[in-house]
Length: 417
Image (cartoon, rainbow, N blue to C red):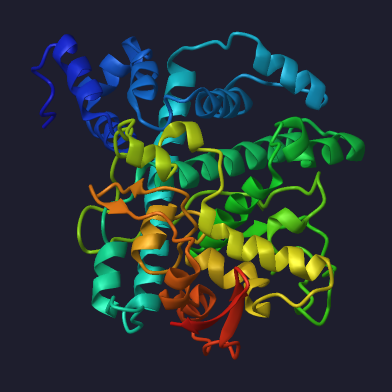
């Protein structure tokens, strides 16, 4: 029996908007003929859902959603990338077919995002559960990992998923439906160029999410160059497989991972045991001194978290033929599984995995206040220098580095873990 059969269409519309959950709305529309009829008569409901969602309300996500819908529903023929971009610039048709496509895309993205987030959470919990850091015990650190995801963490995964779907659906249409020549495909593959992704470091998020989807049972193919810059640093990667190198070391125009399908078997969806397998993104964080200081607000959504500097500095050292702090920081495969480019720096700080110099006291999201970094030599001499790199290496089961001291401000300081 249809539980919605006796409800007026106006009330059903309000219920759908109130739910504000793409996956749940898709399920209700599939299960209830009455809700499906209301949706078919009022496809603009999807626009309302997209505008109300904390992730899809942003213009860059709406553009990706519109463009994928265009590829799947409206473009019968498209000879090359320039024509595709012109079609994307036009005001799209929006009826029941387009609305249903967008709803299914948003619901699929939500399920994949929740599963990827749960996977990196579970992976990090497994890495931390028996490893203390200073005064933090393993269970203390696990508890901090299990705290709800921040808006910034969720946005990074959602944004990557939308881009991976956009590239993959477009490339599949170009090769299988539209018959683009090789030159046009090469132009399409330079995804970062024609999408104006200025900071190439952001592309590593795509590779991180692709690695997680691969572990969940999907089959990405990679178009990066298999040759490694320094053979003694990394093993050679096979062509078409995941690279050990960070994506920010690739030349511009390197294509992102390609997926022929994003259909994850239901048995591969994950749950942390603390809640439902799928959830809606958290609301936008308030604009406060603390959220601004820790880059947790939407205006920082394209920025890389501070702690990724450990990986970037290692790659820079290798490119200059200098010894990095650890060669294990050059192999991004384990760090992708731990989601290190996804977590916000506040969480990584609370886990005892990162700190940075502060010219003045800094408020924290939990209502605390961090003191400014001391500059007095006597104070510095008494302040322990934490070997954060060794703490990172412990996450992947590697022993502490052999280095025991470092020069800071003209002083030889001993490391502590």
